Length: 107
Image (cartoon, rainbow, N blue to C red; front, side):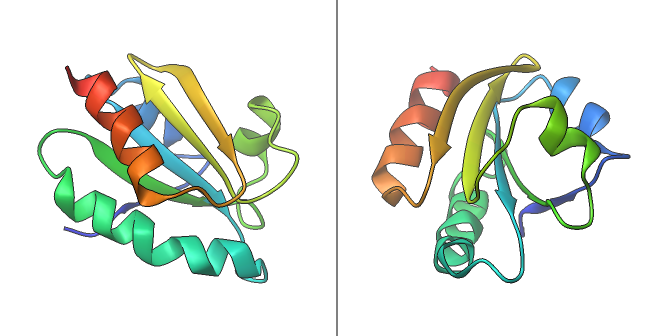
């Protein structure tokens, strides 16, 4: 399963009202580090299918949600647990960093 395509319209339902941990990648097409992170996000979406959700939100197409969470630079990845932001990663991190946070949120 691919990552979820998040928008200003579906963010509340897919992220804030979700009973599973949700990893959200805030990105843009023109952002080279975001492009580097893309394959990692896709892999995480597949590896955590059924245990957590992984989604991407394009900040150029959706500007309400990034503003609500103070996203000032991209890529920014946020981990939400029970609708609350628990961890924020600014810039490209290793896949293991994201996995460790997801594993902690699941257990």
